[in-house]
Length: 330
Image (cartoon, rainbow, N blue to C red; front, side, top):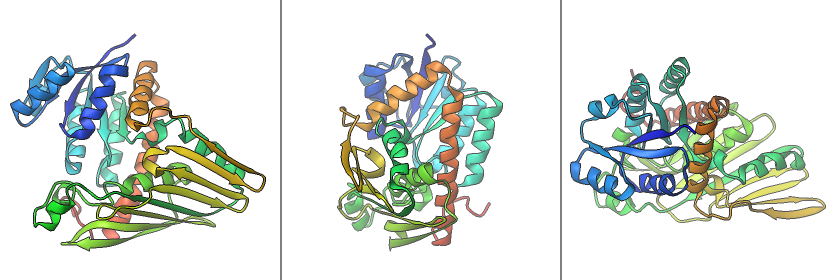
């Protein structure tokens, strides 16, 4: 069995969740090194999850020949540069969502990974979840799809800071922040995973200090429309619903969790849940571990096609809505 010695960039809550399951569940991934801007934070992460090395110099970290795989969970705007540097250093990369702010960046990284025969994947749990195939297999039961409705509303723990005049990274346009790039990305990702890129799309954001704290993405397809709503400034019921001429499909917990799937047609009403462990990261780590062990480039490249469609869609609607990030005019 091949062992992938992993290095991490980032130290937020998502990193802890991923490393917890790497430590407990992964058979072929082992945490080897941690990069952090501060030694104290890096040491704390390393001690908790058993890393051998801590770096505060990114170049030295990337040059470590014993690191095979890098997990990137830094602020959004840094994903492209850090992923590119990792690939150029010959490392496989798992990059947190959103993959990149711009499609040209995503295409460059995908091409680079293919040229160097390296694994590259965006860490969106959706397609790794056991309930996801239930969704894809059930769509045909609805016959002709007419309407898709999605909502992901979760009041951000940093929203009060924004209201107080601060600018946390998760909202900061200088770091490619905002609701669209954060939680509405899950809605768009699942929609393009199921139906491909839309014919047209537009974003109607609620702006506070020029930052989209909530909003709706309107995606027009041939014969149906998808409405993807999300908010970091409210609470709401999270769901994803596909309506067809013969019934509907309802996903509890929405695009990010796919906690259970209800399929209702004229003669049937079934609810299916193949996820006894509630944490979606559990399945993401288990599946990534298996795909890496199997050397399954094909499955990971198929997910990169979804990633590219999501990035292209999000970039187009973001720019049309007047939300500008550093580098957009390059």
